[in-house]
Length: 155
Ligand SMILES: [Mg+2]
Image (cartoon, rainbow, N blue to C red):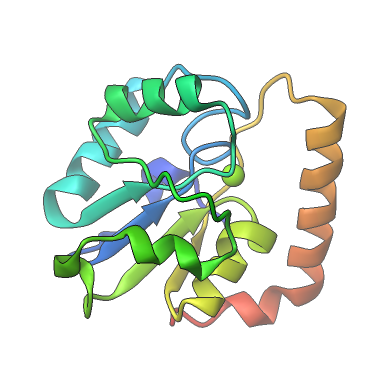
């Protein structure tokens, strides 16, 4: 599966979408969502149940993004790739296909694998990333490159 920018992800219908924030919608630890991203989120949310899921502990920032996008935020104390995150989803989500959309295989990709969800790997949005985050991205990208065939199946 080639990496695609979030705004170019394929059409998804009648699914539960778990949407990563950092590196997928905005650069790491930033909070301004550009209009194209907002528009793609809007069309995604028109046809699906969309939830934001971030491992960032910056609650104020996470809530600011959720408000801009008018999307609910999973607030579980569990972090990706724990599928315990899904426990927070409401009853009407049970039984629907799940799709995890994100830039990192070791969080978003593994969450999808463990939760039997489809994984859509997005091209990372980068900015003035901290050295620590650049190392994390590098490591994630190495793992992705080495394990690419694992992520090629859509389910
Ligand atoms: Mg991310």
